[in-house]
Length: 219
Ligand SMILES: Nc1ncnc2c1ncn2[C@@H]1O[C@H](COP(=O)(O)OP(=O)(O)OP(=O)(O)O)[C@@H](O)[C@H]1O
Ligand SMILES: Nc1nc2c(ncn2[C@@H]2O[C@H](COP(=O)(O)O)[C@@H](O)[C@H]2O)c(=O)[nH]1
Image 1 (tube, rainbow, N blue to C red):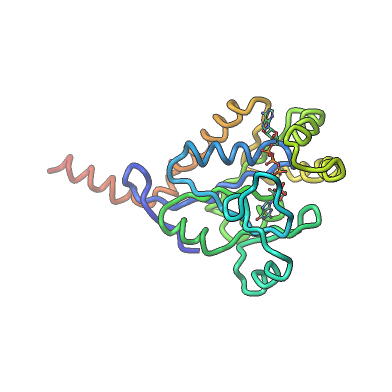
Image 2: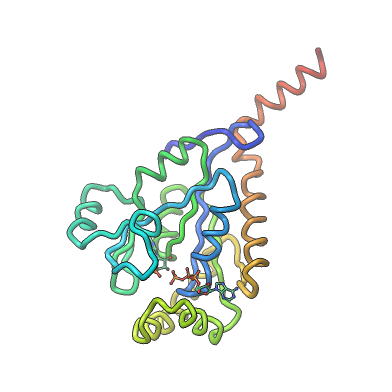
């Protein structure tokens, strides 16, 4: 994957793939929206899905809502960077927008499950930074799924019964954030992104930058 661009300080930097995963309802969509609003240089990856649109969701913003045949054709044409079946529906990351954003020096934010994270890691290990969001308790998780008021009781039951399995993948992630308070969790996730952007190996323009500084000192 071709990755490169300029950091906000003008030093060339490799774009990174910032992944948030969690059991359903722990808060990754909420945290993703806050990150996109408040962190310049970060683009959301809009997944394709065969699941039905929820009230308030917008096609092309929250997901690209496609039928099963279209999703199958995208898989066949290798248009998805990763894909998985979650809660009986297919979800996948369209490849082209991600590659375009990374090539333009932007970081890309993914709200995907553990299966997708594993696939991204296999493809671009050095560029993936993964964060697993945990709920403070099972009771809070259930309350959040109900308070979102977008899924039937049957769907919520399914998601609660999958939560333990989803959570069993926590140790595969680089960072773990417990989402007690949304502002605190946001501050933690934001700190991770800021620190990862400054990693020496990501700042590919540093050699030239430091040489320039040394030239100024000598001249
Ligand atoms: N720290 C928090 N305290 C209380 N409620 C929260 C907190 N974080 C998120 N919520 C609420 O919990 C509900 C679920 O959050 P959200 O939709 O972000 O979860 P999610 O992990 O993206 O779920 P899914 O995987 O199903 O998309 C939302 O109504 C959101 O406003
Ligand atoms: N592997 C992928 N998982 C994805 C993708 N887009 C979303 N998801 C995950 O699916 C579940 C359910 O999402 P919901 O919007 O129906 O609540 C959640 O864990 C998402 O993170 C994707 O492109 N690939």
